[in-house]
Length: 297
Image (cartoon, rainbow, N blue to C red; front, side, top):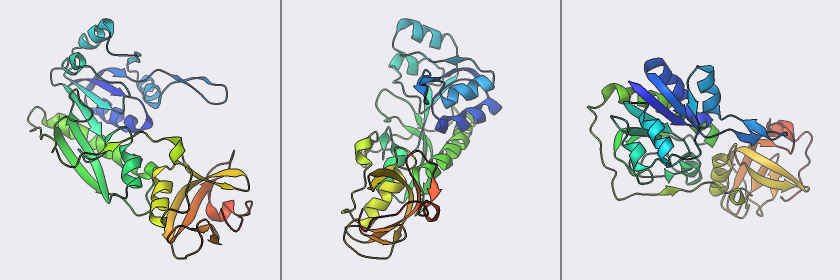
């Protein structure tokens, strides 16, 4: 098939690779380069970098609502557009342009966790499973009928980074299967019950409140790892907490019990990986060689 690929972050790259092996990609759409790094020089997105390495044509319009952008998209004559974490809203005229429409790879079991941060929110909410849906796009936010879905369990110590990589690989496999079976797949409308929205993660959520139950603190740490990273203050220094597990022990909230095990409102959490300011992520055993924890955080 002739495919327009639309994606931006690292999550989308395995999908681009899988489609490049099996179909003709006539254009890649992604977000424009953004200032990054200490010098704040414009840096291309992971999808743009990978597409250029593959010799594919890249476009990054600021919007798809103008007549020129719409005409350029339609002129590609695509059979289908594949959209995964693109970052722009597609107007109806764009959704209707490919012969078989636009398919979205969404990292949740719709209708649960529609929206921007489904992986983070699934872990933070304590969901036991999540998955990937291949959805026929329509004008609403992640409201379209589902063509394929596959569920996976969320591990007890799994972080957003871990789950991100698993779901990205799963999405790449499922979209290849979906394209092989088009147009014979039967779109299943999403049920009206069970709708939840995965709001974009706000950095204001990231400071650990040790008065919360240990199960909630553990989910917060794993759900915000690696970005933006849950954090606590140690002797005036902000320390990111990147991996954790539930632990035995009781004490006043924030009390350091042993090693990097900290008491919460109920129960305790053991920090297994952390990152000091300006340093690389390190196992807790290594970070404690140079970081003296107070009696209470």
